[in-house]
Image (cartoon, rainbow, N blue to C red; front, top):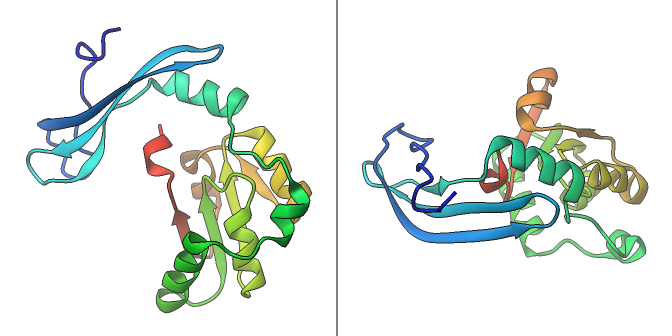
Length: 172
């Protein structure tokens, strides 16, 4: 389908259909075909979001079979100090939420969660990639659910914090 012919999604914040596309990309996904995506903002409320996205089926297949959010050097990952983003997430969390269960949606191999656990949080998370979920267990000994936020969050009670970091643009 031509990117220009693919309909734009309504704004996830206000529901308006008047999006202004600022960037369009055509991605060739190995084994899956072509995906046309676009980024822009809502002309009504200004919210910046993905205004054209790949189909739900394509996203599910990509993250289940081809996700590249995996770790190639487990020993280095275990020894790595928290990066800038992880330190920022910890700082924001500790300023706004009592320590308890931190649950990360789209946690990949659990890198952020490992540092949250080291800082005294109980941790859990979910990711649609079976390979990333297995690596979270193998590398950081973190039990991570294989699935999406819509599948996993309703099953969770008592969460002090839910993290969505660099994940919204990937969600169905």
